[in-house]
Length: 164
Image 1 (cartoon, rainbow, N blue to C red):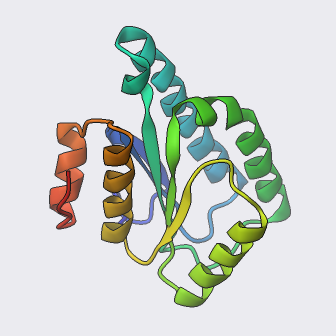
Image 2 (cartoon, helix red, strand yellow):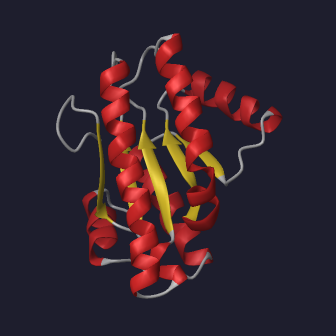
């Protein structure tokens, strides 16, 4: 599910579910812009928590990789690793995890196996479809006692997901 066809983007329109959409062939500049937007959204969690409560900043990320067919170049992968390290404090404080939509069962299986070896610091799931990803997000939010916004409920309705 791309919010805008063939456009990489990240949105908090469905807060507390952050939706990140990646497309095939994204280059360094596209990833860098996407990461800047993601960082802005994660920083907003601090503001939300300060304005209300720590729970108000809690979120979960749904990364749609279903259109991605090739891996980024080494420079872009290095940028992703760097950003991942920089975001650790915010992620540990506010993120309930990440679900990644990967439609290929072979790739999904391989990524799951890698995640057994490399322990991601937060819950991580690989989903076969966007609705499965939304469903996992809703389950995790419910387990953590984080209420669903109207935006999150809209995302559920758009993809036929029932839940909390």
